[in-house]
Length: 221
Image 1 (cartoon, rainbow, N blue to C red):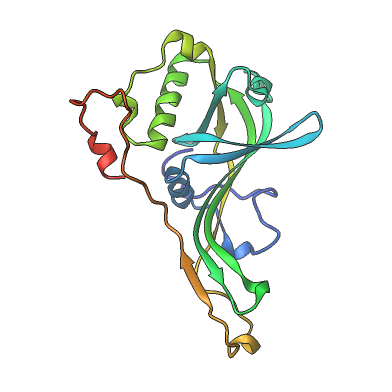
Image 2 (image 1 turned 120 degrees about the vertical axis):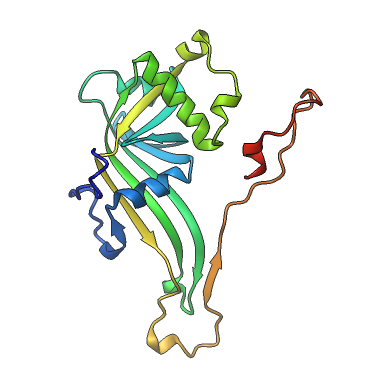
């Protein structure tokens, strides 16, 4: 998709049936949600039953990459040819717990992305290496250049699948609780409990050489 295009095209599958006002197809918003996470849930159908797997992902332009073992069932199911494996991939940030006066109106503030489409196995060696570097950097930016790249044996044991950002949407909820007017005088606390990700202090490996300094990219986490 050209960089001049600011929005993805809505489809029947990306238009929600509830809370449509929270849906967005803005390209910049969708990319920002994807770029500030690294865990996704990959859904597909296996032997007639739905399966959802938590796994790492990375975005490169208008493509998402997911990796796993070559023995993994979904990665083997993708193959390299059309039409690919139909999947649904989701990413979610929970930004706050919304506590209302009524149990019914309790909610969460969140930012989420849902992607539909066929997943294809990456077979080009150059694209595969670039995807694996992107996966490492998605988790810890700058780490790919500060670690040994995969050797041929490791590459052969690793599969990567590609999912194009074509049929994609975001959904966002923010703000205070939506209490009913008749509940506003009830004697219950109402508001938002913010949630933010946090990182602990890096713990060096026991066998790390004492002279190995903590990388700069870890000091900003």
